[in-house]
Length: 207
Length: 207
Image 1 (cartoon, rainbow over the protein chains, first blue to last red):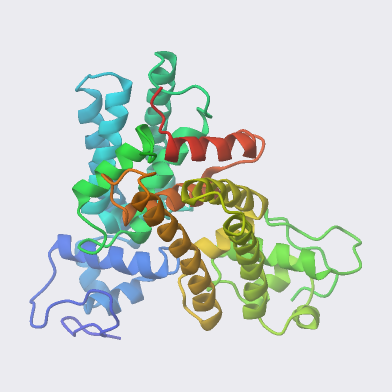
Image 2: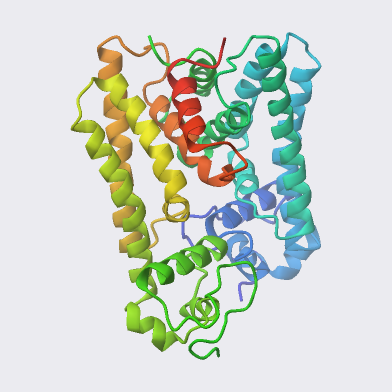
């Protein structure tokens, strides 16, 4: 078993900097989320986290009580950022189409800025209370988008010849796919990405 | 250990019909894919497949040589269907925008018709030769969409003020999200779904 301060095996998952005296909560969270995303949360043991962090399990327990507490903190990171974006848009007025555009734009930016945390959120299966609570918060965000699409259709601002049930899921599915393929620096800027999403969804790609 | 013909535990994953004398390859494949999608391919052992099929491991080995052979057959099911759709569209002419529309329409239909098999494909991580070969076939399909978008932009038929790198990924991401949320019978018909995708991507949602 690795002892405290021993460097982690170099296997591609973030390893602690050599000689670093310990972890702050922020770095610990970041390394754990990388391990969760690589192996799956359920398949990750405290022993695996200990190996990747290069510190003993008891050193981890100095920071957190359980693996689930780390998960909860990571999911809060993603959900807090998404909820703040949605709340700021909804308090801003402007009508449902503008709010939908702002929500998609803001969600793209949160996904890119908090990619490992949102990736973890999007892969949850709801196998525990912490996961189920996170999925409920996620569903509330989906319902907000569904409500805005409905309002915009009722006001005649969005097409009614498309499925109002599917459209919100499809636009969020498009945005969520970003965590699967977007590579900062190689896939273009986040400004271009957000603009492409908003243009495609509302104006369409046809010239 | 379950013996041959013993009913599987009733835990929500497809169980064999009582009194059924054995499995055809088709049913065996279907049950195994459900188990892979539920627990993850890597986390699924032949023992788990045996339990869910309600037949012994040696009875499974009567049908297939390994867990990986089952995976390969399942991925072929998804990829063959997708490749047939793409090939039929590309041989049909009509210009890049019409071909993109037909590819998105056809891909939606394959996803709905072969949902468990495509779900398995979309969750692969490339941890083995079989998986890597499947991901290469998947990447070839993505490149076809990228090429068509580029051709359509060059012909002035699609906007050039959007990211040509991101647009193909976003439209495929939108379509792929269907396996995460579409419920046949509850989310509307596949015709509506395919029409909503094509309308949103090319014409946009704005009324």
